[in-house]
Length: 449
Image 1 (cartoon, rainbow, N blue to C red):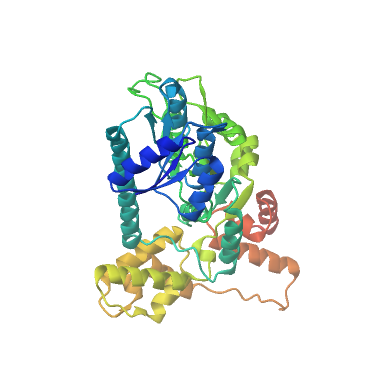
Image 2: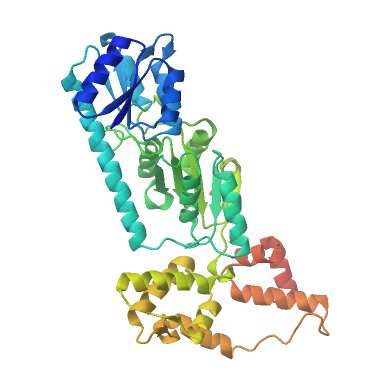
């Protein structure tokens, strides 16, 4: 490894450098924070050895400044015997370990061996994640679809900030993927991306999962846990399906959003965490708030930056997405397929895709497995898709046309009727029409729809 030694005592720097080079590492030296930061800009290192006291400066403050840009960098604090409590505090604030003075080469070797093991595990995890990406196609968001292109452009602009982001959209539209992309585009990209699934647990267990607990806080709490908020420090915390967050937990999340403070379950000591928060929902949070199931103040605090991902049926690139998935599954299965027949493309274009990108992925994977020709035919797709195409072809079309001999009221009624037929919920229809649900209710009643 390449290791940077930061200590204001030349003898300690020289002694450490000799020991490190004898172990096969390379080392650079710095005597204060300014020179250390300059060295890091010139040549990134694999580990940092920092004295707790750098003359009049604080080694902990230098560590925190470095970790804001490199949250994955192992920092080992060098401390005098009487400053063990400060060293423990440094570990609580992000240090990897500490070396008490006077230390021996054996102690230095032991600490660095732990650093090497952790680095190896991180590399192994990155390798496994890359394997998963190769074997499981991620939802495709980048596309020529104008609405989606605008969302991605705005998301890139927002990503470098720490603004809270709320992602709305139906299940399967790629909300989690967009959250990961925002994290990847941000200055926190080297930090952790931690997901909390809000509908998965009871209120008490969800609080424990998010904020951690101390031993004995509840039945089955046999040891202390830090929680996912602490695990996400330096990175991004993604709250999936935030509408299902229990009411009892919502004030705690609101407080954390406001001042980044929280307490573990069963503990009174206040903790802090440097976390960027992204939330997602497939429900109408305004309606949940009106029904008393979601706090208004939490909704306002979450809704700093909002993106609404369009459902697949409203995207213009459905066939392009299908071709992308076909190429992936063809490679994975070793089957040589030329594409989709004209009838299969028509089926993909006309189907409503209530399961969105997730349903499309499963449908194309099935088609690749069942195809008997070089082209995918409608019969290779799930039955509901080809049946839907037949029903669409047999369905009588509206005789009304723009500019025809009809009144504006007739045209409005027909447009509302067609939108209602093509959507699953009244809330979705209202969004497409650009009116609120109560207005849609009045118009349906007026037109007898």
